[in-house]
Length: 536
Image (tube, rainbow, N blue to C red; front, side):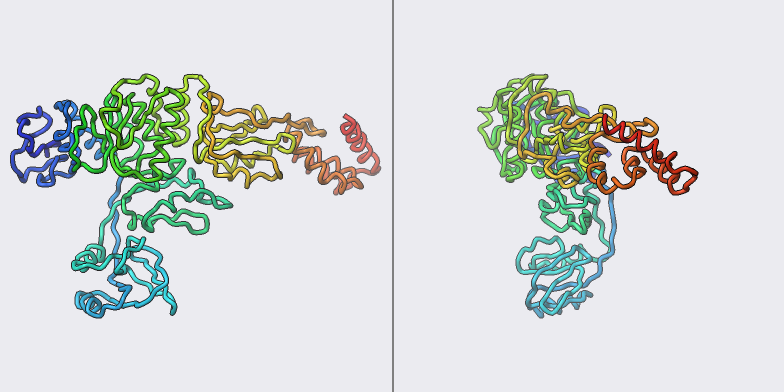
């Protein structure tokens, strides 16, 4: 099988070099990538015709880059084929005896429901809720569009659609999930959940603070991946390695991104970058700018979420360079074609957390300069009241983006603002009242915001029995303040408040065993040592 083929449409093209076969008419020969569905190719790439038709700076080298980008996309895709057996239980969400009988005649079990309250579940496990109770089925048919991939809109060829979704069906795993990075999965209180809100089908849901993925119901939109702040979700077709490798082809090229390749307009020297709008997030946008070193153009209808991410990247780039990095539906003549060295960043380790790599890119662009403050949704600035913080590190344990760290060497709690997603879980996890404070929607563009700075610090406390350091001074002071009065009658218990775990157990066991003939020989030294310690 040859890799690249071009079905000839443009009269000026006769030869595209040794790597791209020019085909004058459809053939049975197999190819990997082609510009037209009439050719027998695994991948249809409409951006090829779009570029040839609309570029005033067309050349073979740039055209080959489009083919290479698609080949990389194919090579790096981590999609996996899956299979499921779906029964033929159909619920018709309106009265239609003719449709019901038609389905029954074709081997389906069908029932009509004239009124229903709502539906939940997905393909193969759909539930229709009525006033009389719940009805289990595999698929449903409605007269209006419902936000569920398992509910089909009735039309003339509905039987054909049902046949494609019943019996043994194949589908692909489209997203990968890493629960350790998730801001919701397994946490004691509910945070984030943006992916579930963004999902237009029922592929993502929550159950007892766990993310539930129904791969058969995924419609391949990638919205969940782009809204995820931590890379807990990854799009298999355009995974991080794939984007990294494709972007290398576009070094110093000026990029245009569009969803509609049927548009006719002069794209001049711009080179199309094929990627779904719904997958674009702040990291991918900034990475493309870093790689190309030029402003990029986006043409088409953009979502509110994408507009938000474009504004974030533009605010960052404008603060650092004074230049607009992303132009939306702009006249291409008005977009500068200059190479802007301040746009460049060598940071490209996509194995890092999304926030971590995004922060490293910004830090690299800052070049140790302070460029002020910008409004940035889902970023935050954390502060800690050192007088009440005991350095128990529950906040650090709760943070799975490493925005908050417990530094055991310095006995300090440290914070990196560029990694914070403003989820607030650190506040919920703090054992102290009015100790952690959060200022939302702020990102300071200075070097210190992209490193871990100390928020609270304390010295270690040494066991008064053996001298081993085992806790922070503030934590011991707090425990002694709470229990000191209750233990005032028992010198052994009071003494044990200032002991490490080993010595605490030893002291209490000696007391319990009563091995001393003279009790004063046991209690007196403890009391003397305790009083000496308390007096300082």
